[in-house]
Image 1: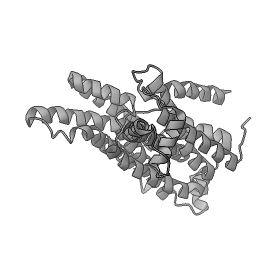
Image 2: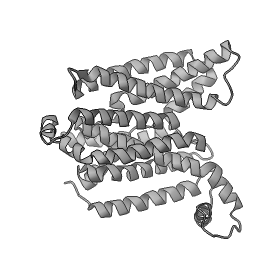
Image 3: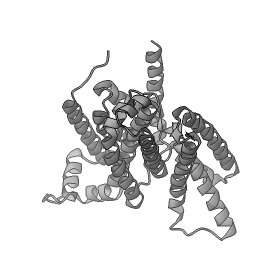
Image 4: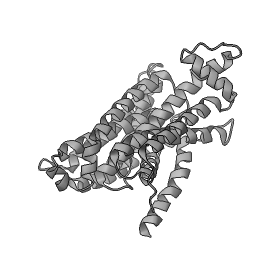
Length: 349
């Protein structure tokens, strides 16, 4: 039996959970800070008149390391969950995932190409500019995700209409093709590049910086503001494409918007933090179990839930093997894979 929670209670609970996740993410790590000092330092950084006694170290750690990492986790978790809602609405299937349109595999292919460019550039031109190196994988990953998704969308178009089943099959095929290309580039990479690609494919919030964060934050805010405006159209799409058309919904325009927002959001998230799986599958389904299928509630609630889940997963990644750090993709896979099996068994029952 599905238990429905009233929207106000759900938003209050998820907001408190997200605030707790932010607080713990700022306080805990290889160098843990007292919770009260963390709160005082954070409030002082926001401009509140709080005495700086004993807060110098906390402010330094928060400002330079913890705050950009926490903001990155919020943005990545929120946009991945939003993209999951969009894909599940597009395919009208609660088991759909943003990776179905090829954006994640395209981003991985783009990163591999970026690594190849770095190798060729280093050998042919005496090295790429040092300031450009840290951003090469991210830029290529973002462009790769957008490129493969655009190709999937084009293959799904026929006679002026977008066929969701064709787009799904094209996504599966191009995902497999991208995977084989990534395998080839990985095989040809040198040891240092191979290590970089391996850790990038596992996902991590390590190395977050404000310069990498702002593009993702702008995209996340844009997607988070745009998709809720299409909540009623997504509700109508649940009835079927022809029924939604009879209700006055521009179904083809809605499909384009959903694919574009997913490609933009997931591409930016993967470019900033690497491959982090299952967030776009687990979070929307959990929120749907609590609040029902109404996208007016599902979309904003998924943002809060996705951000909270990724911050808690990052805490586990930081603390489980401290001072070493687990890739966050491993943690989300440990959470998501059993949940996915549970959904399959529940659906069969």
